[in-house]
Length: 545
Image (cartoon, rainbow, N blue to C red; front, side):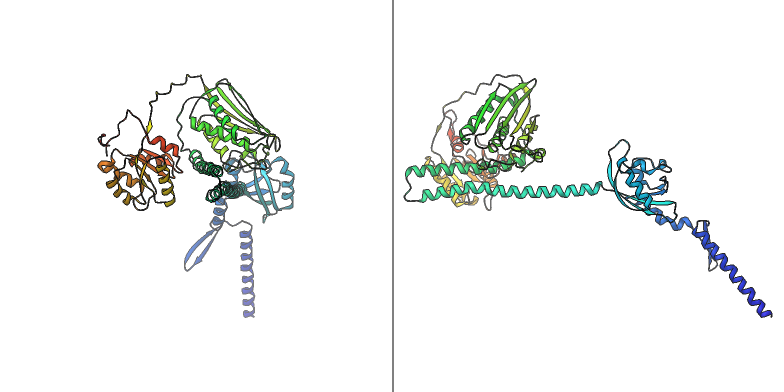
């Protein structure tokens, strides 16, 4: 009996302990217990609810998305700092306010439907006090408690920027491909003409008239190739901000007349250029202003089909010079107009594409105008309705043109020329050209050979290619200046590089002149002119070195 009574007592005790455990678990589950004390191996370990929730709270507070706990009525019970930052409201002001106040009015009905459904995802616009709206993605789930709703708010602006960056990169890549294709096209045209002209010259049956025409084609197309290459180099130089202007009072009307007169001789038949020009003065770099005029006029001609018309006007408007190019050509689409001055961008052309172009003229023109303190604006009513380009530059009072310095008669005398060039074809052609002009020429294919010839031939002019094997042209130039008979010599650098830094480097190496290939014979002829009042002899003062 006693044993049976003892078993009932043990069972009752176990049931009581189980009931206590269940009550404890219920209290923990519903938040009625703040801490537990667990004795293990004669030591007490305290566990608090805050210690178990801490990692999750840190995670929510540090996450890059906004986190919000809502009451079913829409009031904010909790939000993290990220959400407060997104909506531009102090964190301490967020609790108790309604979340839909930050949702754009047109999105609120759909947002409320999501809240009523207690779950889902929704893109909408949030509004920030005193700022623009921005798009977010809201993910909504119901909490463990039926009266709570959890929101995760993701800012989509960075995603949009990533998409835009990708689109810009794809556009730039497409423009690059189009530019390379256009460059290949533009290079093939003159090269094809040159090749044909050479075949004419090689033909034993060609007449003197045919040979003359072939030579003219070669000369013209080589000049075109040089212009293409110069444009590519120049646009990089100007757009990157490396160009320096040499400003002086400039009669803009005279510059416009020169450019238009030159274009009229080359403009295609049935295209008419009309001019209305008033005398207007600016403070400008004459060479750069002519580049602007040439680029804008070439653009108008290139986009104006047969029977089209181009009107060029120049007038003063207060303290501003206003220059406009208006054509009746193919026009500019609304999509293209905002980017018409971007480098390598090209609009539609007349179908014959007789004027060609690489899509850099307008970019170059805009940058040069801006360097002069002006603006250039393009407008068009759309494709097929022509276009207008208006340049505005600061105007200055009219200035008397400074008198040209008095000129003295000059003459050309035969020169003893040392030509150092490692390209056999270029060396041979330049040698023949110089000898035809009456000069005596000795040649060398590298710097070392050229320095040996300097000792034996005693030339008074040295034409030196900069890109020589072994000793480059700069090193050869410095060596020549160390020789007694090289100190007073006229020394000219021949190179494919024409940046200001390249000119400066040539001067530092002792060169008197810097000529960019292909060589202009007239430029060489001017360098070889002899002023009778200037004595060039071996007794000339030594050049400092």
